[in-house]
Length: 103
Image 1: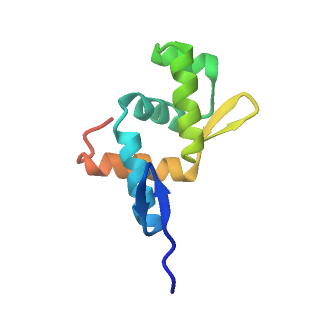
Image 2: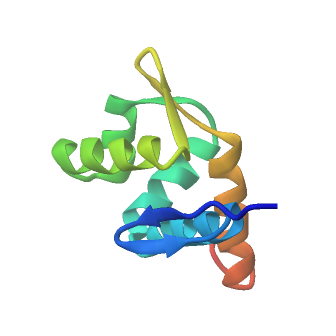
């Protein structure tokens, strides 16, 4: 079986597992992304409601949400953000990595 290599931020990625771990690292590196993902995990939510709950500037929310969408953790359905299966897995993995301490 031939290994396919992807490039992520200039680093060679040899398999899907390494790619997922790298994406989870990007997620974990920004606590606001984790907060947004945890909020969306509770249920589909509109942008305005997100802004009220997390109290971040709208341009910051838009930027973070665009990153979460491009990473495949969130999808936009009309004007409602929803978590993807990959987003749920990444969040679960992060919680396990920190010993379940994140609530």
